[in-house]
Image 1 (cartoon, rainbow, N blue to C red):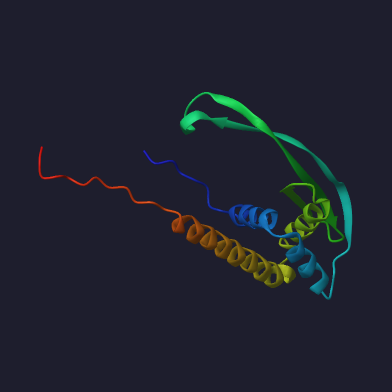
Image 2 (tube, rainbow, N blue to C red):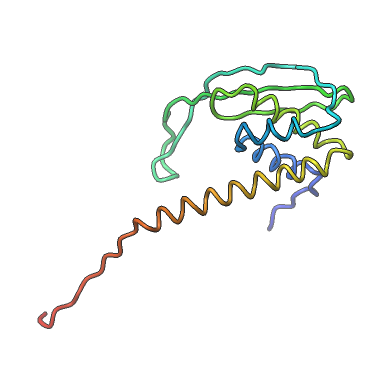
Length: 154
């Protein structure tokens, strides 16, 4: 029997937006913030702060879990003057990036900012797709095809 899932109330779109904001380059988020003519009032709820998380892995994807190592992460939570709360997190030490991601997450919850945020997310998605395609091209250039030649004798 298939699992029934509740109708998406925008959380999947928000999750995808937050994921792309965390993968964006710092310069892209800074430029998008500076390009805003009507910046919202922002207050910090938590952070921005930097800490460590433990990365876990599994041998073959299904074996027993093990601690792979630690990774540095930055996170922030902000509140807009209109009450929306945004969260941002990213790998690395960029507190400013985490704070801007939180601001854009909160702004995405307001109808008047949808156009700006959707354009930003589309730009980030395009940049990531180009970067992935370039990485694939570079990897494909190093591919070696091995084959077995059959000789006339058995």
